[in-house]
Image: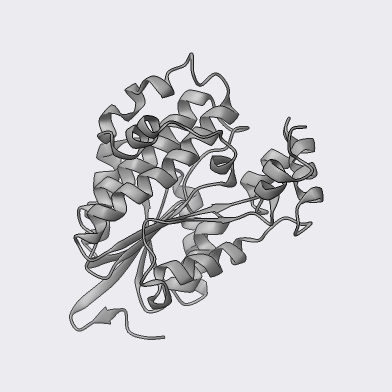
Length: 283
């Protein structure tokens, strides 16, 4: 394994969210680097860290609540204590079957904006970030130019005060999830401008149904029949795997993706195509 130091600089990869997708990306981009693996639940981080350590990666863990600025700042400080932060993998979040609209907006929308802001202040030249968003953001009807700009550029601590995000506008968890994921891709585009001034890049991936514990919660939850229908009528005819997401992330974070920033990559086996123009489309 290559040395984790470049000259006297230790290259650090920060992974937020110790689930299957975060681990899959980590395996592809972290050889020879120091991994700081953070999760809301310390036991999740510890379990994932052992798996990665047993596979030859240099890993330490941290606890983080992405909806708390103090917690994210503490993670930045911890990661920076190991070396220069060259990579951020943001894969934390909650699904519509796991949380209330308020929690989804606070974790998936506000939390992502907060991570991008705080790590954008310290990312090293040549560094990169991948945010795991969702196909759900692509199923939200078009927003106005003004709404797009507000979600992309409103100061982080004012985001949840936007009229579009108030309880009378976001009345169910699925709507909260969809608008959060749309906001993720908009925020990534806006942040790419700021990250670019540091010589760094940031992109998002919007996976479809990827078999993970979170996806299994959805498949076995109240929307399970709808999720199974999506898989049946999609062009791919199957769900995806975490390793397939890892392949795309490795491109985006590596030298072959050096010309890609501020972009969102939809990889859902054709579910969104079926939703707008195929068998899932409203007649």
